[in-house]
Length: 291
Ligand SMILES: Nc1ncnc2c1ncn2[C@@H]1O[C@H](COP(=O)(O)OP(=O)(O)OP(=O)(O)O)[C@@H](O)[C@H]1O
Ligand SMILES: [Mg+2]
Image (cartoon, rainbow, N blue to C red):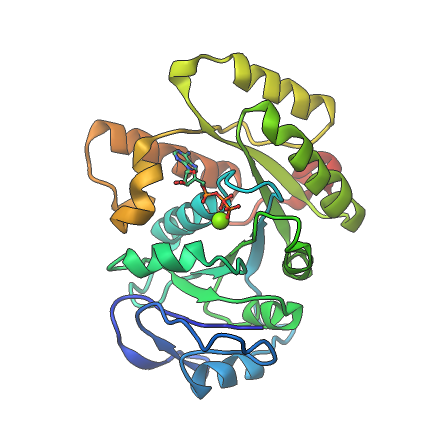
């Protein structure tokens, strides 16, 4: 397992959080490669805080949203990062202490690549792999209310997805409105999520309105025929989203022009529908995915 960073807002050094845990906040940090046996981090302080993090009945635990689809390139990273950004935007209190953590479990580390380009990452971020125990510990760091876990988009890394799902309170399944995504999404839901009794919702992502509704309608019919719960909000395709990682922006940092506001709106609406702003939506509302 590796945890290679907890960071945001420039290199601040070690920060003591009110719980007595201490960890380093800083720029994206890549830990030593090849260390899969223990938490790898910016320093012993991070390891220590995660080892010590344990909840009691009185400790509110973060709600863990795992973003998963074994099909590559469907928008897992895009949704994890931008949902984290809007959730932080809505919930933020102390500007130096985000209630939101993004955990990337993808060995390709594209989230790291993105986060590394963002000057003022508005949430905390950590690169982690493989160990369910460490993910479970993150949930007990009292600072966080929502943790978004980005997962790999390949069948070979199924074990990483399985590990991430150990800590999941719910699963967000991004899916583009295109037939090529049907089978892999079905495999993820029917063979991975449902047998575990996990609450999940499909989110249609990267719909291009200029192409008309035909593909969208067909995909919605396909989803509904299988009885999979899906959000009403569809995230539209915008070049801004495609460029965001290279531009070092998350959705709350887009410019204030009309198109950017529209692009942003989808994520705020999606967060609202998922109940991320205040009390977390009841898992039972997700229909047949209820655990
Ligand atoms: N709504 C959207 N509008 C425009 N581009 C998008 C949208 N969603 C995703 N993309 C782009 O599609 C590509 C794949 O998205 P992303 O990296 O989020 O998918 P992924 O599921 O995390 O992929 P992988 O399985 O490889 O990790 C990226 O270039 C991303 O910018
Ligand atoms: Mg990804």
